[in-house]
Amino acid sequence: MIIHWLIDPFVSYGFMRRALVACCALSLSTAPLGVFLLLRRMSLVGDALSHAILPGVAVGYLLCGMSLMAMGIGGFIAGLLVALLSGLVTSQTTLKEDASFAGFYLGSLALGVTLVSLHGSSVDLLHLLFGSILAVDSNAINFVGVIATFTVLALALLYRALIIEAFDVAFLRVNRRGWPRLIHALFLALVVLNLVAGFQILGTLMSVGLMMLPAVAARCWSGHLSTTLLLAVIIGLLSAVIGLLWSFYASLPAGPAIVLTASLWFFISVLLGPRGGFMAALRRHRVVNNKEME
Amino acid sequence: MITLENVVLGYQGQGISPAISGSVQTGSMTALVGANGSGKSTLLKTIAGLLPAVSGRLRFDAAAQPRIAYLPQQSEIDHQFPINVADVVAMGCWPATGLLGRIGRGEKVLIGQALERVGLTALAARPIETLSGGQFQRMLFARLLVQQAPLVLLDEPFSGIDSQTCRLLMEVINQLHAGGQTLLVVLHDNDLVARHFPQTLLLSQKRVLWGASGDVLTLGATDSRQFPPLVQVS
Image (cartoon, rainbow over all chains, first blue to last red):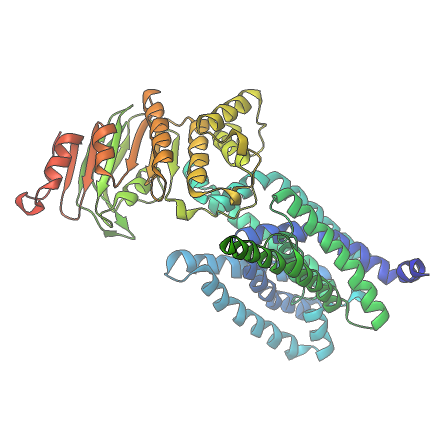
């Protein structure tokens, strides 16, 4: 029975159950963040920040071993530091945001890998980079749960300001002088916080996948923000469940399996999505051609 | 409402305009004209508080800066953003409602009236990506109507817009003026300036002409080399 096939791994194995709960909590908060990153044309900034947290995670690991709290705090500090420094470079020099982020995150990644390989084994490095669902204990679930709850509440509080800032930043700045910078900073802090929450399961390199891919896929299906947000969360949840099952049955690492599933959703959406999809573009093209024929 | 004392405009300490002195009266309507790069947009940004002046002083009459409505050039806003027309117009309630405040019945009536004024009632629920350039600008004007800001700054509100929409928007501008709001509008069309705007501020790299529209436009049309820099007409 297919139902058994779908449910059994979660019923029989505690680590699968914990991974499922953690991934679902993560999807609830990261997918909406991804949508806002997308709307601010900052899709790649999420990626850069996910690389940037590695040296902090590495320092936490070197000091306290595989302690989630130490690695989480280290990662959070490192991510914020890169975000702050990039912001500083962007505002003080002629470099654009993407260039300054590129400058910092590449160095961060290299530094992180160097630090881990100084004292750890290559297995540890692989865990940090690509995650490990076996590492998800009840501490990790609490950790993810608290961050996800906090993020959803913060998004609800900032919702109006985030939309206005993404749509028309001059409007917000004229009405509330210091707000755009403050909201930008709070938003980036939320992104870093969620990347830190995701690295246990998905790894530092993959945790951005569950943030951006569902958001980009959802954007192909809807022109309304609330629908896009909801769709992104649903696609995130489905990717988590399917990815975990896939990794269980095919003995794949969970992070890449979940992110690969999400990227399948992305491909389907880009091909078939009614707005922004290839098919939609083709249809429009055909309509224009037909009109010209007439 | 605003007094400028030898204000030099520019970016990052680099001045791009001559020193501007003069004042904008409360309830006045002033056109800002001048060649590209003469600093018209920069002046609006400086008054809006988005940019510091390179030197000089910019003072607002009242102790506090008044609420300002600022409409930048169209290209600065994302036209693909997933939001509908009514929601953009509702943003005009922002300073009053703040981060979490409810949009009450009074505001809803205001939003409805603004949409009707610019002829977008039927399109209220449409996503903005389906709007034409003219409809988009009408929507932003509806937001201005909802904002009811004492000071309104418009940067080339008619660029790339058909003459019919332009007429409608000019009526809205006149309505704001009649309602006692102070307006500063960057424009390229001198006929429009002469017909509708009592005051004109002409900016160029060398000099500033500021005064009644008729005088400024006549002076501005003649060869600039005949005039010493910084002629003040009032």
